[in-house]
Length: 133
Image (cartoon, rainbow, N blue to C red; front, side, top):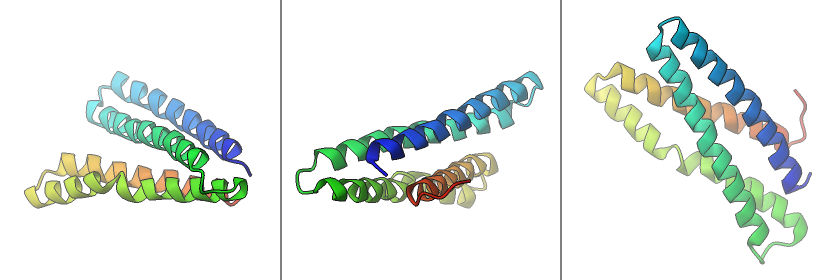
């Protein structure tokens, strides 16, 4: 699979998930469940961040002259997987801090972000291995 094919499959996944989250957030807001709607929007923001990281990782792998064309795909995969470690570091810290202060709402939001990161990573690994749903 090429970098472009991997990107296209992930972008398709992002669009599908984001559309569902937006619809769910609107539905929750209409029902007066503002906090739940806010959590859905928090998940949506994670998808936006990792969509941007997907593009950045692909560009970095393609532009790096030290990789042969076959190595570029592996470089892209490794680069993107690193984003799953570095990007949520702040969210992990905020989660721990919120738990320590007893701020359950803030802790819930950070936990949801971290769970969303795991979902995205699992999907990327599935796609990059060529597995079907």
